[in-house]
Image 1 (cartoon, helix red, strand yellow):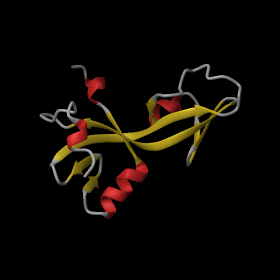
Image 2 (tube, one colour; image 1 turned 180 degrees about the vertical axis):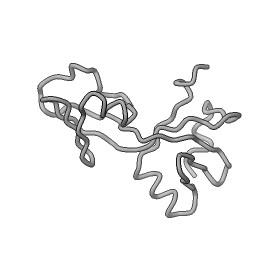
Image 3 (cartoon, one colour; image 1 turned 90 degrees about the vertical axis):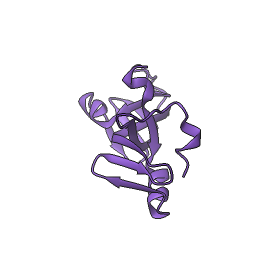
Length: 115
């Protein structure tokens, strides 16, 4: 399995709730799901939900999760749940892209990502 196949998206809202409920811990760039001990290296990410400006999704971003750094490189401006790329406007969901730490496997997601 390639590295990109094991990536997961964790919405900010979910992580905030998990941390507040003492079900997860986020330290630096590592997220730990406390009940299972599963660990992920995380980077800031954005899930692109829909294009809302009717200018077209020429970059084919809708339905994708992109690293915030990659979006910054193409000139995207993100403010909370909105994003502008040139003339195109999108509804987005901010969060974290997680890659299982060495030895972890992301195939059985349902059993351990919802603490």
